[in-house]
Length: 315
Image (cartoon, rainbow, N blue to C red; front, side, top):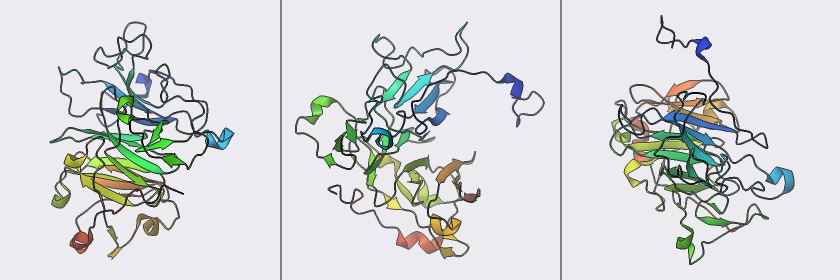
């Protein structure tokens, strides 16, 4: 921080902590974040969580799903949530927290906190009540998912997409879980939806603001491409038990509109932001605008659950 202005950073304080090589151009950088619920003296305080994609969509390159097989490779940082202490430790730019789940396993990178992820581009924590960490993992051909963060969890990619088995030679061919699936010790989504609702999930936040009381305790998420905005009760988010969720109707300039209609585009490039009061903002790359969610009585009677969120996976 700038010593004369707490709202400015000091560019001279820049320090590179770590660098990760990626084989392709996509699924590269993900979310960086600190657990806002951790307090000084607690084991998670000051530790940096890093979402890292699996190295890229190899279907475009050689027609094979996840040809690099990085997400299940415990010697690769790709397809993971990493957790490190970013403070300099002697000659090292960072250190591995002793509480990391694989820190004592010589066959695993100690920085790995969770694995089996395709593109964990966004994650956040509930700052009240549950304290849960929600990870938005962008899917391949059929399923988008939200996972609850759990140390040491294997979220299944690329053995699984959502709650379905992946065929590495046929991108859109998914099959049901085997009867003996429990022996695989995989962690399945807390929420999932199919590509009839959108093509790339983006995680938001649990609403803890004051402007929209009906949304208190609701996890807000959306889709980068379709721009649809959804919500679910954070208390219903449990890994392996996909939650019921709802579409949040939006009113803009006095009439109900979708994000695509608001930005006059066929791709929303939707993201979410959060202010210090817990209010949530919608951002899109299409027009560069920042829009705050506010209460609208007009839409409260039109909120309905999403029926059949996975649609048809047989095609």
